[in-house]
Length: 92
Image (cartoon, rainbow, N blue to C red; front, side, top):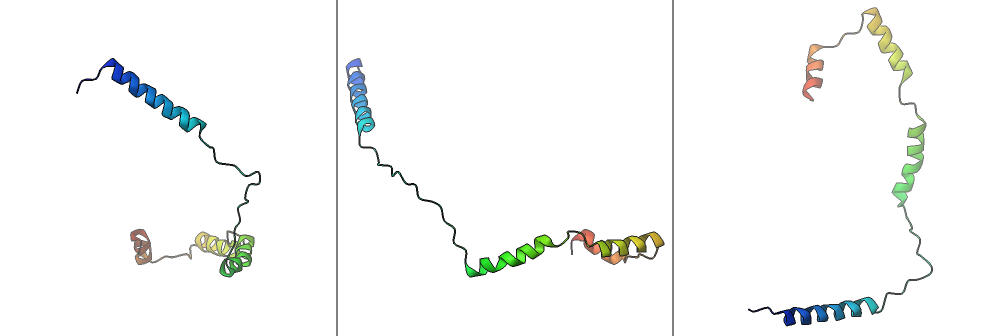
């Protein structure tokens, strides 16, 4: 196939005309009022609200348990079975 300068010019001309048509073509109309997003929760999801609130109000650390364990450790009474430690290390 032989490509001459005239062929290239014709192709460029056609491409330019198509670009003009696509730029001047009809643009989609935009509505002045934009639709607001909306979220609808199921009754089950709404039931989680009070539970989540209670959970958020609970302290993250159980101070009584921490005090009990600290006392056991400092007095030397805290003992853990080697088997329990091994199982935790192995992820069982």
